[in-house]
Length: 247
Image: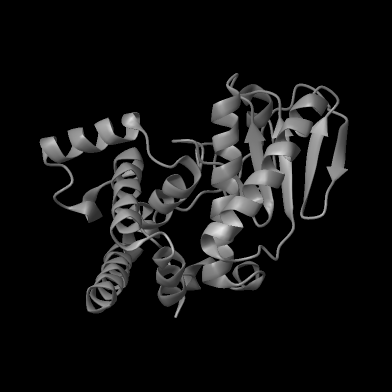
């Protein structure tokens, strides 16, 4: 029990130390909206379910059904992992391919084209999740799982609607290894590809300063970190760490 308490305190202290040291840098990464050319006016429809909606255009009915079937199963699974029920209704906006996704003007004031569009992460604006099919159903499933995980973590940290009502400058800015690493651990699990990337990171020495890591390097290190916590202390400890981070 003493070791667990020390672990939680160390994690949270590390998160807030990194947050304090990176606020000025993050302040210079603001994105501004810009117009996008839309080459085709799509006719949008939606399926409504108990906990989420799936919006799709006239060519995406099958993909929307696939999304709904997988999201139903995965939402329950991830809620059980965090011992938390998502309060906010999810809206999946489904694009049949990346070129359609890039024409979307949703959320341009907040996000640029590349935000959450690397390493399997989605663009999420409030409760709206943009998904696009990459020709691989497994990769698409990972997008869905990552989106659900991120929404649940955001609610656990900020409450269901509070994040929408307070200025972004007042929000806690979590390092990528902490949040995105956790999202990838929950959504993707662990496989040989992840293990090989992490092994290469340790061998090369780039993991010596976790606060210096960026992009996929930070996410890989975070995924490995949360896997260690889960294996050493049990996944049931992870929701407690999120709650204590919020406190």
